[in-house]
Image (cartoon, rainbow, N blue to C red; front, side, top):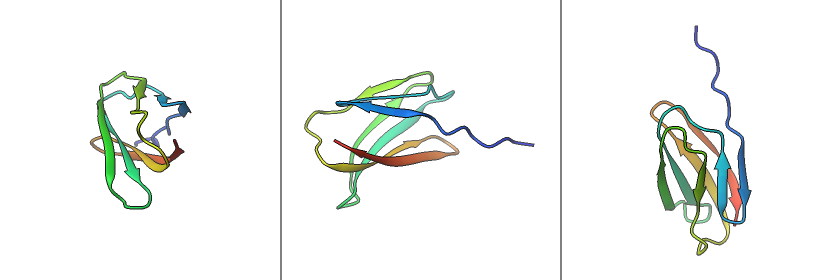
Length: 78
């Protein structure tokens, strides 16, 4: 029997996103909420806990962490 996945805690300070370490690599994606266009993506290595976003990004974005079998998402304002 599989247990439910633990939702990671994610924090934003300025343009630094910090999060719980993932056991396998995943992709962090930012999607513009007005155009639905992916404006940024970064591969996060297994065990990684942070990602510095470009300071040129401004506005509201959907943030997604996508791995092989699961995706977590939420919204951030930059």
